[in-house]
Length: 76
Image 1 (cartoon, rainbow, N blue to C red):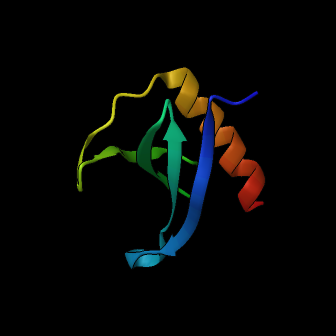
Image 2: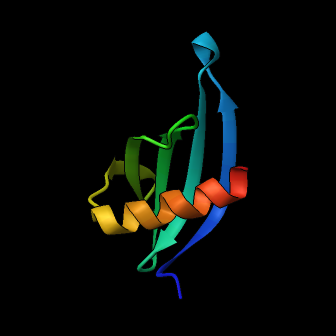
């Protein structure tokens, strides 16, 4: 069973024809927003959303990898 849940998944067309995937995730009862480059799912940024603001997130590589695999299945 996954330790997280994807609450929202958005594929954005950005400048220069680059697409990004933004995922809002609940992990350990906290909300995170992660943005990946769509072509290879390279992590662009990760934020912890708390009290109406955002701070850089510190997620383990194993959690990020699991999320990337889940997103890959959803966007194919």
